[in-house]
Image: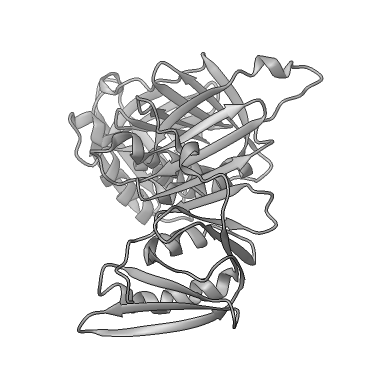
Length: 388
């Protein structure tokens, strides 16, 4: 194998694929990236795969001799990132050797790798169920749900995001058992109704690890918003295709909780409030709340149209802030984990938000105003002792 490529492009490609390289590999080759040079296409392909998550990308290169080899991901990445951006990089290796030489204007480096045949094959599923997604819509849905997934590996299904498709609509949902984020997009799928029968797009659903979808969201954010992402799902594997980039992920098996039944049909109380002001007050109050269970209390004063935000850290101190708000229903005091509130409010992009609830111990819903109901954030209140 012998080729010449751009340092900047190789460095960017390595940064992308090494996110799928195992930190604690069960086999030495899983700590490597696979480099495949194809003189016919003039492309250098890079692949990282830890048996759960796989990322593949390619870049233009001047390829004299085709070939493939795997190299230690961390070492290769550190060397390439430090080479001069002003000079192209030459990679060369003998057919019967697992050692590669990197040459730049600043010097040359030799690195020992492993045979490409030892690298596991990426499961590039392109059969089964497939859809074509608007990249910007998928990115919004992921940003609006990923934060609410669980980090507890004992609750494996809850460590993922549940995606469901129905016609042109897509719904993403995540819950950790204490809060639930649901993002619904009516026209997320690209379907040409002149050529396709909408009935052919069957309803289907899949749960994917949050780690994989964070990489999908990162991949999308580096692309043009008008691009589309193709998704293929079959036999416990999902593949996302975006021009020269591929991401594969295993699915999480099992039946995802019926989260729709958790969302109340109606509410007797509601509060409308400015989102940015609410976030600013919570961030200040959180300094004290962090000292004692992260709990903040919201108290409504309907006579003055004021919402009081308080935190009381025993033996440390207390604090309060007040914000103008618009109320319907009865005066109430309700408590929440302040981190849950901040994480949810920061993914909403409207000026005002609506807090809907029935009682201090039943689920509360935070939703954007004037957003066509796309986003629903349910948070379970924290039970507090009555001060009366």
